Amino acid sequence: MGATILVADDDRAIRTVLNQALARLGHDVRMCGNAATLWRWVADGEGDLVITDVIMPDENGLDLIPRIKKLRPELRVIVMSAQSTLMTAVKATERGAFEYLPKPFDLRELVSVVERALSTPHASPAPVAGEPEEQLPLIGRSPAMQEIYRAIARLMGTDLTVMITGESGTGKELVARALHDFGKRRGGPFVAINMAAIPRELIESELFGHERGAFTGATARGVGRFEQAKGGTLFLDEIGDMPAEAQTRLLRVLQEGEYTAVGGRAPIRVDVRIIAATHRDLPQLIRQGLFREDLFYRLNVAPVRLPPLRERSVDIAALAGHFAALASREGLPFKTIDEAAMERLRRYRWPGNVRELENLVRRLAALYSQEVIGLDVIETELAEAPPPPAAAAEAAGGEGLAAAVERHINDYFAAHRGTTPAAGLYDRVLREIERPLIVATLGATRGNQIKAAHLLGLNRNTLRKKIRELDIPVVRGLK
Image (cartoon, helix red, strand yellow):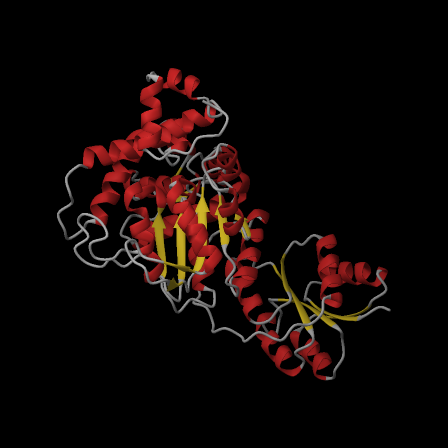
């Protein structure tokens, strides 16, 4: 038996399309073009489902949702909007919408959402969270970004472990911060740690802390990132670069909900939400024996893939405008990009993704005197852009060798700010560069150490020694 569906949208064409589609399914569709009429129907007890636009002549549809949920908590509301930003999706979810759909919507998807709304059993209503700060941590209205916004809206009220994947420069930490800032742990700390930036021998101490005397130089108790993030979110960036021993300890934490500090005995309960991210192909690392399969499944509870910029070129103009405004607020001249130049940017491959675009916009603001940037300038800038990273550089974090060394040194000194770093920086940096080179070569040879040694120009015994010293897992069955 059909349901009564209340539709509120000031666009007559959309009302007609929805009426035809839903009526064919046997539903009774009542349509209006304003919020006042919709509210009167709801207050009179009419309707089994509401579909509403956000921007209407008399009231914002999002402001109507809390009133509907208070009067009739069982009545589900589907929100549609051409104002398709992250904040729209977040607000719709926080105010109790069953689903949010950006315009233009896929009619088949809307019909599927309607069927779910009418058939899914009702759960106890969740408390409405406080109003989020009006800001846009993520920019873009492409279909790919709409999926990201909807994923964030669905996950923000949960404690599910999230795995964010995507190429370097796509904004993985921005998504992690959005999940925290709009989630139920927003009042707690957001703590980030980059696995590729921490010396391998210090990762376990950085994560879990250490007791005094646990190792040479441990003159006082050290607080780890898990403890620092208590009550909040722990963001494990570049999880694909985590050493094997630390992978094992992290797996125990996820399984048992507790850990012990390095050199400690008393278990410490975990009270954090974990979000992991990587630009690496983890299934491929699993096949190479470099990443634990059981840990992958513990982390990959809710996967979120960030698209590279070349897959959402329609967002480039909005992103460029956003970065130009940021540069202006920091004291640089405001620049605009003409349409011919913008079209060239849309055709560019963007190997460095959003980060590369941001750097370009800042460079345009700083180095060029003209207020409007034309095609000739863009052609010059793109012609001088570095080529995409090679396989070995990808293994080192998607950076060139010099950039990787500079990043590691900067991170090393930042980690020891206010103190005198220990000697041995040369060995530490060499170790960090040497390991991903060997890992990438072993991956290319499917774990064959004879071929890898030949490619690297090393003696086979030397390679074996380095594999042991650098704690590089090997694929069983290959030598």
